[in-house]
Length: 299
Image (tube, rainbow, N blue to C red; front, top):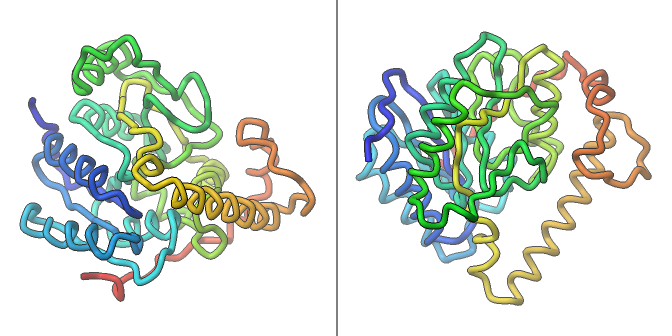
């Protein structure tokens, strides 16, 4: 399979919290998909696996020419993982990939193509077989394509949807591209307020407040291995992980309400029932999120 060849440097960042097998598959998909000029940033978010992912990431220094590896000394969460990638990127285009997302050459080709269509496109994601916003525009049913290789599915979708994109009020961040000019304008992910949730939403509305476009590329398909980061765990560990997520969701929602001046007793209505015009109007344009130093975690 022909790889996507990057003529100008791009960044691919991968973060993992446990699940060595899924993480290896994610990294292998990158190796199978990309050639040319690029850098790799790998982050082990203090995985509870006695150093297996940390060691695997460290060994990738033998595999990639331009690579940085970080190991957090405690679990810092999704927001800090993304922020570490953004803060240490040296390219104009930064692509973040969760360890249960498997990219392909056609995905990269079209994601980058769409990111170049206009100057005010700042934040781009593609479609997938599972995106937890439940939007039909983002979620592609591939049940009738079980006989096809994932790359063939991606190629078929690209052939039908090339150059096709829609603008969104927000984007959820399991796999996405950010253009450097957006970071220069609004800053980074807000890790002071959010650990695992709402930081991608917050980044979206800040982008929109500064007239940057958050867009969905309908031709860039990336496979999401749904629930893989739960299914590998013993039943008691699954329950603990679900409880931690529910607790963090409630905590991050409380901080989001405070930041955007919503009533403190407002229950979370679901992302698709939120008034984004109202939220965008409340963005403090003086609140630039500065780059954070993660050098203490570099290994």
